[in-house]
Image 1 (cartoon, helix red, strand yellow):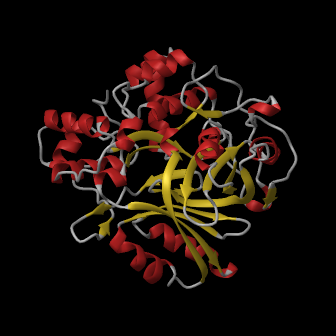
Image 2: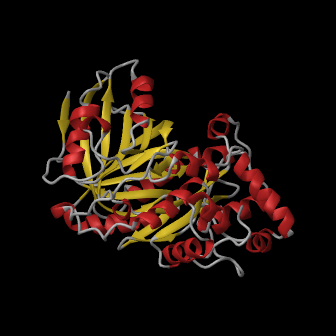
Length: 410
C-alpha cells in the first residue's frame, strides 16, 4: 500500500500500538491497569510545544468523567478509591481553569438538527489562520483543524439538506483565501469522539462508573424524534455545560427541578445527548495528532472499519463518500508511534489500498468547543429552528459559568 504525508520522526515514548509492545495511553471500551505517562515533546515545525501532561490522578478523574460526565464527586471518589474532597478539588480546578470541559454532545441526526459532512479546504498560505478563525466562528461547524499535507483545513459540520449548498457555496467557499473545497458526506460512524477513553482505570473502576442504561447501539438505530421546546432548552444548556445543575436546567427550560432531572435522564437514555469530558490530547500525553484518509478495496469497508475502530490510537473513524472510504483521527505520543501505527496497523490491513496522512498543526474548534493555548471554551451545539436555520446557544440568566459542576449529578 502507499502512504503519503509526513509522519517520520525520532524519539520514543508511550502510546504506540500493540504490535510494537509499548504502552498505550488510551483505548475504547473497557479499562485496563494504569501505566506511566511519558513526557510530552514539542511537535517541532508542525506546531508549538505542548503543555505538560496531567498527573496520574488528574488523568484518572478525566477518565471517570469520560465514562459519565454527570457523575457526582462522591461516586467518582468511591470508584477511584480517593477522598471526595480530593476529587472535588482537583476536578473543579481542571474545569474552572479550562483544561477540561464536560459537555453534552447532541445526537444531531436523532434530534433532526442536521447531517454530518466533512470538508477538505485549501487556502492561500497567508490567509490560512484567518480562514480557520472564520470557519471556527460558524455555528454549524463542530470541528476545525489546520493540517499539513494535501489539505490545509479539516472541517466537520452538521447541516440540514436545505442548508448544505448555501453553507458550502455561499459561506465556506466565499471566505477570502479559500482556493479549493471538497465535500464528503458521512455515511456511518465506526467510532465517534465521545466513545474514545483514556486507558488509566482498572476494569472494576470503570464498571463502577458505567451507566448500563445508556445504550449507544440502540441510540444509533433509533428513529429521529424532534425534541420538545423544553428538551431543546435542556440540550442547549447541556451542550454548554454538561454538569449544569438541575436547578439551572429547570430555570432555563421553565420546568420544576424534579421534572428537569427526569427529562435529562430520558434524553440520555434515548441517546439524544452524550455527556463526557474533553481535554486536549497533549494534556493526556498524546501530542501528535493526524487525520488518515483511507482508500479501501471494494467490499472491505465494514471489515476494515470495524477492526480499526478497536485500535486505542483511533479517536474517530467514519465512512464517507468520495475517493476515500474511511477517515480516521488518531492521537499518539510521538512521531515514531505514528510511523509504527502506519506501518504495523494500516500497512498490515490487506483491505487498505492507500493512506493519505495529514498532521494536525492546530485545532481551534472541536466538538463545538473552542480551543486556545490548551484551554477549552464550550460554545454549545447550534439549535435548529423551523426553516432549517441554526443559531448558537446563548447563556440565559441563571445558566452556569464555565467549569461549574452539577451538585445533583448522578
